[in-house]
Image (cartoon, rainbow, N blue to C red; front, side, top):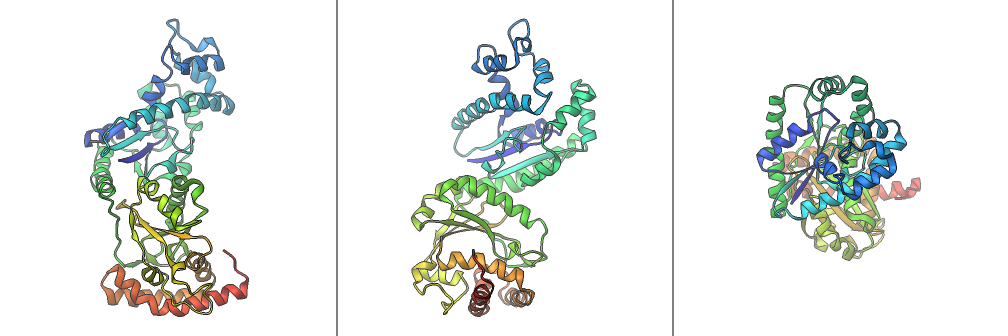
Length: 404
């Protein structure tokens, strides 16, 4: 099952996007619909709201008077937090009940208006944000929903802003134009990203990017932060730390368009325990890495600067992303082992030494020319440089007092 988080500001067009995804075959779990269900007459949710906000939020027939509740709940932050504290847990429980009942191969799209505000974004392998300019949203709320402008502005101001939504968005769909334009964009995303993602996840396949060096992308750090948050959520306390590593972690450095992440754990047994959680997060396991392969992966021979010449201390587990839109390698290594230490050192060493960056970039260029995009051959072509770079990096670490 692929679970997608869908959100956007009020009036941005979540309903239209959900409807399109439903037509494409998605199972829609609508947070607004559930939030109404859990406060129907006779529910514990409605009783709790009355206790918190008073009897005057009820209509004569005993049902919830939503405008009356909104007038109180959106008056200030404390009141809004009180409302969310009552409704969110009930909605979450009901959402999980619905999802548990759908087929295992479904693509579940969870329409959650307050996905950002509730901190739920890292729970999803993919987050889609539908966006529209504030003035466009205001016009829709006033003309289509009959809100007063003051009420509409208060609702918008009470939600996350564009920067906060952008920080969690794997996919950003603009809906400032016509609904037809949104539908076209949505279908393209469904067919070319969501469907392949779901297929890869079901088959436990990972996405491989060609060994092609591209100009540094200023969004790589932001993309990595989303992945790190997702992996921290998936791994919980079993991850001692989660770090962005590799060339894309070095500021303004050209690299393959692949995000490398390292999860540090206490043991390889713990790494194995994380396999199911990482698969649910969108990262199937690639394979067990042999000792020889792990040594090669470090691109180094063991030198005097290695902390141990025991090949067993170079082993790891590796997962990859099933998302065709974001090739990612997830390396799981044991705390204190030389491969775990060097992955952290390498980023800081390159960032601090322009001449080393220039040398490594030249090696990348030569490796790319000689391997025609084959990832394994590309890595092997760089190994001679890494053999000496490993020694130089640890010399720098000793000289500067670097610590992971």
